[in-house]
Length: 110
Image (cartoon, rainbow, N blue to C red; front, side, top):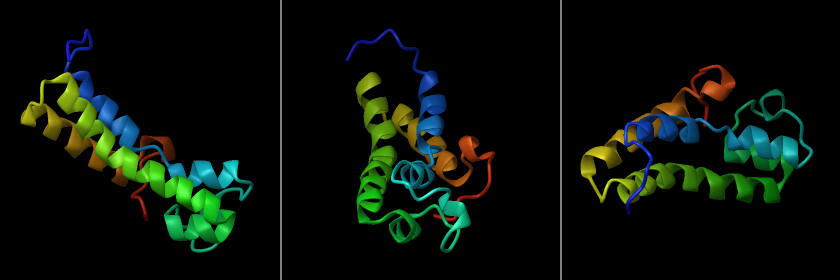
């Protein structure tokens, strides 16, 4: 795929995508408030189901799985399947999950 995006943006975009706290977002969207202040205090799927119900949990899980695969897949498409660029997306994506910028870098409990 030919694109005008510079490849060095891949790790930054992967980190930002990996750091999206879907558990927090969907609990609020489904009317459960702040999932970190209810149940176990975790933003993971089990607590999302406990606080906001099964619909929020299923939506959370689907997007959580997508955020794990999407950066690597997109990096592959943008770089003609370069393993180097795909790894440069996978590692920052993992860092984003553990240290999400949107939650001011706390270690994730999920």
